[in-house]
Length: 347
Image (cartoon, rainbow, N blue to C red):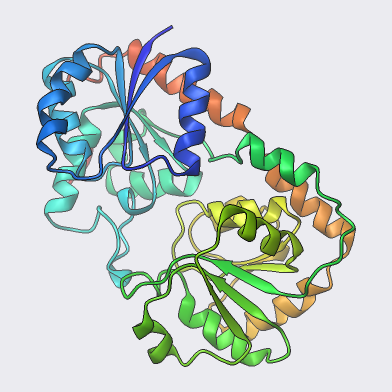
């Protein structure tokens, strides 16, 4: 049983799941880094790494920089669990570590220290390799999975319970992400369907609301507890995600597990998650989204069950296989001893 050091920003649900999966076969110590420059974290880091066989970082952000330096110096294999901002080069959206500039050089250095890079999706891996093609032998993908407790809740729910007719979207909206999340498209689509209630869950900055002129049929639900969110989504008819970039789409997957029919954009990993082209809109035109939502609200129970089964196929067991393979490969690899030129590509 190997000793793993897991370093993350916080134990959000998908990180918590990875921790639980790693603990099945390994001894795991978790460090949550709330402040990147935290002196106590930096001082303790070398000793913590020495006491472990492999170090994993959730995301390749600034917190991973001292980890990569220390792991390389101590010849301890490192794994990065990456996606989203880590692997993106979305210049039009002002998003991603792999846009030209210092961040890209720094991210290159972090990945150079890694024996394995586990991306959230095939799309995220492809996105990474567009910038750093030389990482093809180290970069793999392991889909995120639904937590076991959530899966049990979903599978224990009466599938014949009536639907609310609501269209739900989950995600906090800020000035720096609202175009990426397609909130402008959401507002325009809702305006085209005045008889359908749209619900946006999550904190929304006031400036976005005032600039976007939300229609009367859009409910801003704010932040909800897990129980409140599950109650809302399990009754919803459609889950709507018109994002212009998604490295995975975990909220989509959760909604599908409740039988809410997804209507998503063609961007990022969303087609990969929903599976069927019937749920993907190939244009950013709000009218096209409105037509697909209208069709999906009246989906049959058989169609909803197909959506559920698709989501339930993203199993913890598959995720665990990807993590265990990464740890086994890292422990048996010499990639954690970087050479001068890693063949990663030109930043």
